Length: 165
Length: 288
Ligand SMILES: Cc1cc2nc3c(=O)[nH]c(=O)nc-3n(C[C@H](O)[C@H](O)[C@H](O)COP(=O)(O)OP(=O)(O)OC[C@H]3O[C@@H](n4cnc5c(N)ncnc54)[C@H](O)[C@@H]3O)c2cc1C
Ligand code: FES
Ligand code: FES
Image 1 (cartoon, helix red, strand yellow):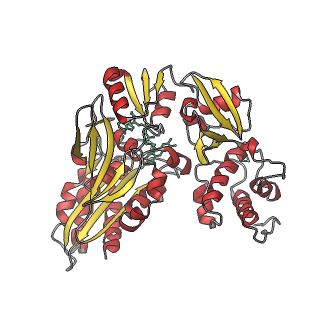
Image 2: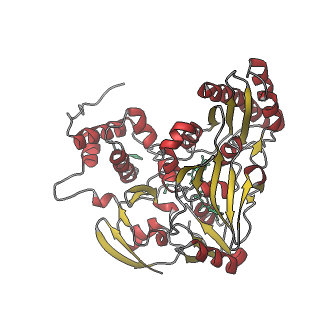
Image 3: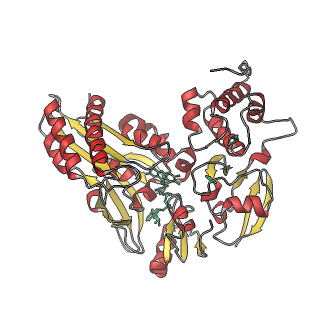
């Protein structure tokens, strides 16, 4: 089946079988391998992308379902102006170790901040409850999202000094 | 994991979808949010020959008050219920449930209609809808009918929705009097299905006497369970400690949980007892 989507702003077409999962279309046909496959069972969030701005687990969506829609992946975060605030937040706060969960985490955070530009710590933790990280222990990810929130709002940036707890 | 091959159609009207479903018969399955169906297809627990995607049909996604009812379109996503003002004001039970259903990404896609039509006792909306005494609209090619939620769940993954029919809406009667509702489930970790869950909806008159009550239980019975003996134990009382203790005891006795990875039968009955008590008290506080 012929489908047409906009991937990070660029019109793309592909001929897919109805059973092709969106994550496979993105990684294999469009070679955008920033979107990861962790669990393949809708649990880990490594495959999180945005469909018309809404975060979704691309391992649990068929490619044919997004015909005509806009898909955003981690590759689209960097622009001519530089890093996206969420990327800067992750970089400044050491919010990744192996980096496997990072693209999904950041895409989820993008929608979270879009809906709620000034989330509380609790709202951030609930907001990323569909994304697993096996390395960081989450604290630095939460700091990264707080940093991005401040940056987006033009507020004073929080300290990025490591906190020893 | 990739599903086995199937044909795919995405009709743009309800009539077209119903016609297609009637022609295809048991070869077809409806695709709503896909967050129960696609995982099952990936595991090859389900191998439909044809998927009829109903996401492109306009007019099936809404939350509105009409006459005596709150009406929810079948294709309304969990997130839309979470963000609805009407729901926040009158049905905090849905916010209790939403926070515990999967995670934000899944709630962006999963639909309320799909959550019921899947007929899975582990899902949370069935018990919530039982507590709220909901009715479900089932639309076929020639007619549509309203079915009480108490007659909707027929068995393991089977509901009153017949071949060639689509669940199109859910309606919940407005309570007369002071009303409060609540839901909680025990889960092993965020995003897990319930070890056990309890939904309670209570209506009180001005003197504080309970005039109506609904109690639904999640994942502790072969089908979503209406805890009738517990309801009867509360009706006509002022919800004193003894009445609440009886209701909690009956719920734990009347369910039929199974021994599994989430716990033993005895453990689950104890959770039901504790949660029933807590949810009655919470609903009562919200009513006042
Ligand atoms: C990781 C994960 C965790 C989850 N955790 C929970 C949880 O804690 N609690 C919970 O309640 N759910 C949970 N779910 C399930 C989720 O809520 C599903 O979205 C929901 O059960 C099904 O809704 P859907 O719209 O995705 O339906 P689909 O998957 O599209 O469909 C499910 C079934 O219902 C049928 N169907 C769907 N819509 C209709 C209709 N309108 N008319 C007739 N038949 C229809 C389909 O043919 C299919 O058989 C979880 C899912 C995932 C992936
Ligand atoms: S790979 Fe999609 S949720 Fe884990
Ligand atoms: S940084 Fe390794 S899984 Fe998150």
